[in-house]
Length: 405
Image 1 (tube, rainbow, N blue to C red):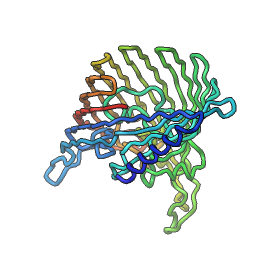
Image 2: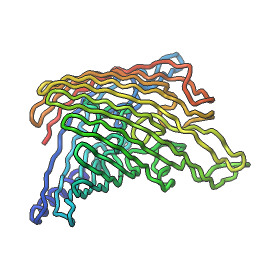
Image 3: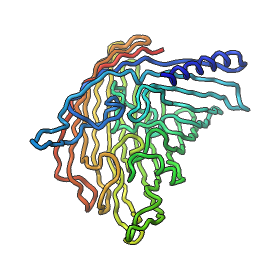
């Protein structure tokens, strides 16, 4: 609680001091959010179940009982948040602005402590702008589902906030985005689990390039993403000796998206041909395709997944919505001996949900039902695909209350 109190005090001091500075404007905003959830079985998840991904595979005990067939549920207010928007004086011909935003999600298994969500500065020259700081990954972008579940459609929808340098060019009807990204809270998976050291040792940022056509009602666009990682810098080789190695795995991913909005309708969809996108909360990784007998140095083949989702919401005060997502494991394309990543033993995922929300100025109350099935199986080492599959399903209920200011 000390961190929350310190943040609020610093925010108050900043607003009080800034209000006396000519050319600055400040806006405080936030929300109090309570989430109550129930699951029919154990799941792959984070934040103690608030950020839900997909059901875990069977895990049988000595008497054949599935240890993961265990219902669970809880209530949290961790995604309550507070933020500050700043508009500053011009820097030359550029308009200046900044944002800092916190929630109380914590990290790992340490919850109920302040966590940085957004922190960036932005320079805007009208047709072009440059952002430096942490905000949404361009793969998340301007097209995401309107659902109550806090995963916002992951692992079908890319989900990540990342440190980045982003350039945007805007003219009526057209937006071009180019970004270089690093990793902080959302991390790539690898030989040592999730870590930012793979991109840190790579010395090459993740690169994104996208284009959008925008009108008053529509957004239609596509993007390409390149990620180059160094899984290891040393390995155990012949006779147990340690060797310095120069390993690298580079992958390219593609996405396309569309969104229609009107006073009563919200219709959105996105499709991702992803390659090793574990840093944006998606399934994937890479496999070992060869090993040097002397040094132990490994060569890798990225795993590819095809993920798509569609979301339709109708209403104004009372809103009803449906969401559907599908993911298919496309394998590695090369023979591999083992895999590093997230969900590399999953062949496909299918998810569907329905929700109803009651919306007033500053208030939202909602209930959502979701069913997700995961098909688990064995690794086919000839191509990295999953065979001999069986399905596992989870029923999930979420009830949320939000007060927004």
